[in-house]
Image 1 (cartoon, rainbow over the protein chains, first blue to last red):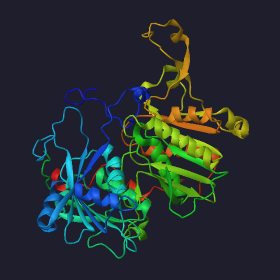
Image 2 (image 1 turned 180 degrees about the horizontal axis):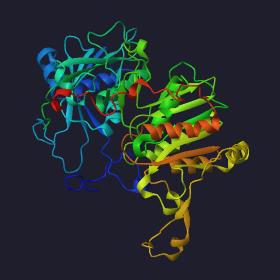
Image 3 (image 1 turned 30 degrees about the vertical axis):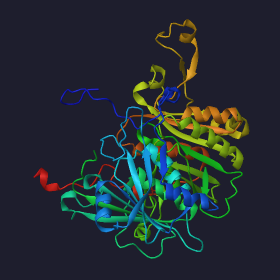
Image 4 (image 1 turned 90 degrees about the horizontal axis):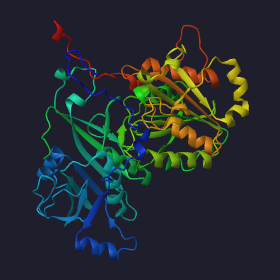
Length: 231
Length: 269
């Protein structure tokens, strides 16, 4: 197909699964691997349900959210209890110090003073395909403390150009926050709800499926004029 | 797979299930959006499945009064209308590559377990891949009917409708496979129709009464195609009837801004 200016472009189709696609062998990189620290492992073994108790979990996704969490939320006494690797393939180089460009890991921290409060720093891109496995694996080892609720806050960001609004982008006062929350969330969040027809794809969206476990979840989306490149 | 909103799952026996396919121009999904919105269907749960990419947003069918509330909506949800005896699945995100087959299997098993009465598949196909005989046909809408539905009253309904069945095509029209049999052998093809045809075949194998409705179209503004497919399905089931001076279908609030934000008009001055 050629455009008005003559260059050849591939015809775009939203029909994803054409005919024989299913028969192709597709490398499965949608699996996430979790490695728990020795202390966390020991605690899990001692627990009758093999789980860690969690009252509050903050999941920061992307450079902006992790930067904010590190600066304002993460206290000095936080310890790393888990590392999550996702989307790895055979060619990827993985370093312990997490400095290689191909490192695709994120960490779960826990406050030593209040071990029921955890924070997940996801500074690397988790693909949409890997999100389901990521969420399932993380939450398979976390449970709410007895007689209490578990609250999960997901922090994420998007570009203003991705945001659909009746106000032209140039007239929007950036940055601003939007939220989404499950029905269990008491009260109203501090910012307006995300307007239809805007949607959030990928990892931030996958945690919303946790509502099946009656976990209260809020998603806070920061709409920015420029994103820092992940690499 | 199915997670119910209520503590007990509703009984879906004797219900008709409408399933859209992620296909050319998202026509099936647009048609199902219209059906859900017009019949004021109630959300009864969602499909929790690893084969569909995650997506979350606010209520796509919110009317003006509920716009300030948060009512989460995810990538694959199930709606129900007790009055019309219809259940509709709405899929809002594509499949994870290579996992659509597994979803199909689980979906057919779910349909069987729930004892749904019949299945309607809404899909679309690439207009540029139409065969000569299909172009000459006049209408762009096609159907496929399973033997079970044909025997269960489909035959008499089809007689009243002026519908055109999906044509069979040679398996290998150009003879590139080097097998002369394949040049004469005929089969049904729905290029760009997503899981539509395979789901139809799976349902036929399981003896589920099934109807597939498809439209030949191209990517672009596919609202008219969605309306066409919804009207096509409705001409069989008669869920909605046209009132004077009113359009048959009510478009959901999520259809606004389909082509992005409004732009600053002064850039063209």
